[in-house]
Image (cartoon, rainbow, N blue to C red; front, top):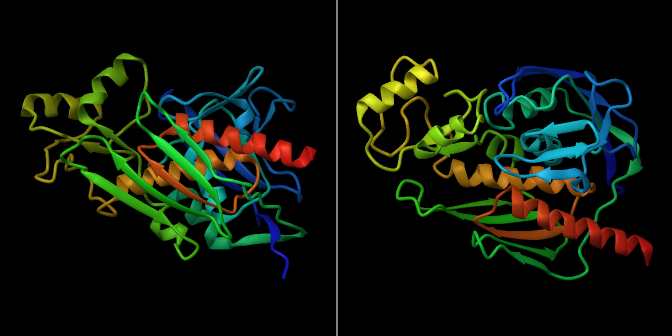
Length: 308
């Protein structure tokens, strides 16, 4: 039986703030014909301001993945792209009126919840998969992060994160063909360490951050005066460091939510390869930089395969 391509059944509208710019943004996900792929359209820049969701256009990977082609720039797209990849949406047009995709709750859940409510529209064209001909290995000597991609009959990810954190410890996450992406991976939110917040603000980032869209890890006890100052910054009533080492403004959805979120990021960045993989992915201490570096290697392997 042929595995066909899919698109959305209808339009979906999402509004919110960009995590780093803090700007309000309105974004519409629209159905697209078979073979269209995933494209972004900056409606604030005109009808021609379209960019493919491709690793070919990745320019920066600090605190999120950014695509850029001429004047068209799209940033912090990984949660949205992971949603489409995890749900097996092959074709869609994403119309957006600002540079940055809205952060919403810091996970892929808002997108996935809306789309799964209606299901997908099957299209009269087969899905095209790519299986690497041999093992692809990449190690970042500076960070110690590693990614290995091996040919396989399905798509799977095994991931370990290690931030030298007493709170997080070594966390593991897995995605297999039997994993329920919508309930087990999509809800996992982004996270940040308490000591990173001040430098991020000073570097003019996380303008749209609030305590509803991130897990905050507090590695060491913090003076209440400092917590009160952070509460004022985020317009929160009060904050405390929970015994587990997290700010008490939310409850974890999974004990290894942070590792699962890093797995979600891999899916979002690998979606930029442009076609689904049949491969086993093994990652250690991954981030957007290594994810997109390996995605480029795979995309180049696809080009070579097509030219042979």
